[in-house]
Length: 167
Image (cartoon, rainbow, N blue to C red):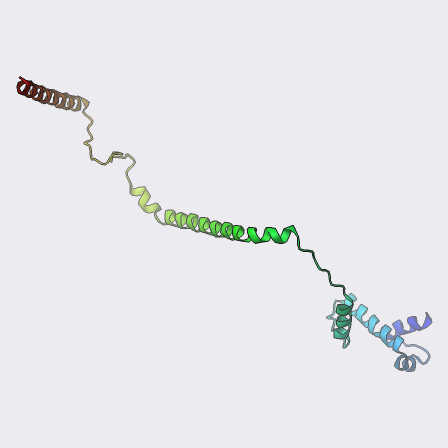
């Protein structure tokens, strides 16, 4: 115990009585303590810790003594076989969805100037043909009635011709 305190004081730069330097050179145990104390001091001061010469040997010994754990093949492995393509398709669909939304958003941002130039009133009909737009309803009603009369007259003429042919 006294030797550990003397070693700690010697590392801190204090004057130590006795033959500590000779004991340190001859004892492997004291040399290991010396190294450990320096490592602790470096950690406490926040200094960079340099790995020791025997680091690779210690790591090799730890790896040799480590047990290998083998996982049994089970349900997880069988689920992985059918789940992998499903997950890949899901990821691909997600990427496509994000791309489409992104392109549409960018196009809408670029076309904001053009959207404002469009008229507020929709003048094109929902059908394929173009129809006249009029604010005078009386004229439109009169035109429709005239067209109906013409159609009725044509039907009467056709009916008369059919009757003549039948007689």
